[in-house]
Image 1 (cartoon, rainbow, N blue to C red):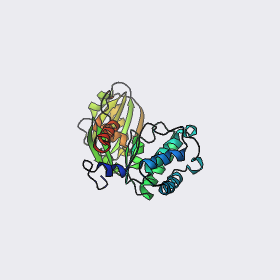
Image 2: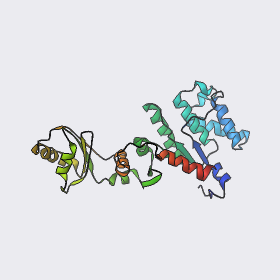
Image 3: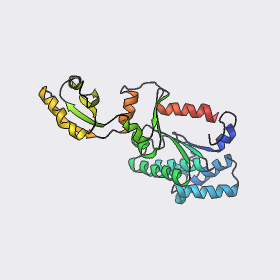
Image 4: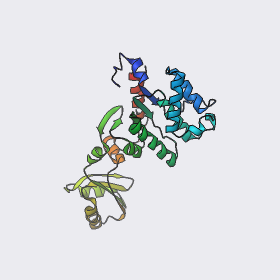
Length: 269
C-alpha cells in the first residue's frame, strides 16, 4: 500500500494513510484548530509544518472562520468536515472514509461529496470509501466493489456494473399474485429477468420503452390488472440486489463491517 509492504513496513503505511471513522472521534472540549494541532503532533509534524497544514485543510473544508470555536458548538456537518481535515493533516497518499455522510441531511451530504471529489482531484489523494448509500457510491466512485457476507461478489466501474443487468427495468404494480404474471413471462426472449416483491413485478428488458405496451397487453389478456408502470434505467441498487439477493440480513457480516475488519487486521495492527 502506497508502495510499502503492509506486513513488514507497518509504520510507513500508517504515515501514508488517513482515516475518518464512522463514529465521531473529535475532542469536543477543544477548538477545531486545537484538534488538528494535536493530531499533527501525533504524526510528528513540526510546529511550522502543522501551522501550514492546518491553514490548508481548514480552507479546503471551509472551516477557517470556525477554527477557534469549540467543537461542542459545531453542527454535525461541520464536525464531519473537521474530521476529514484531520485525516488529511499529515498529507496522506490514501484516505479511508467509513460512511462519511451517515446521518447527515441531503444538503450537507452533497457538500461532503464535493469535498471528497476535490481531495481526489486537487490533493491527488486516493479515496477508499465504504457506504450503504448506492447513490453516494455511484456519484463518487470510479471503481466499486460490492461485498456480501464478507466476500467481494462484484467489482467494476459504475457503468460497467449496471451493464451486467443487460437492460432497462420496468416495474409493474399488479393486483393479485405477481408470481402468476412472472410465469406468463417465462420463455419470452426479450425478458432478461423478472422478480416479484410486495405486489410489484420488476422486469429487466432491452429498449424498455418499447416493451411497456406489450407487458400491459400480456397482463390484460390474462385478466391481471396493472395499477401502475414505472420505467427506469438500472441503478447501483438494482446491481446490489442482483448480486446479493433481497432477503433482510440479520447478524451477518455487512460490507462496511467487512471493510473495517480488513483495515484493522491488515493495516492498523
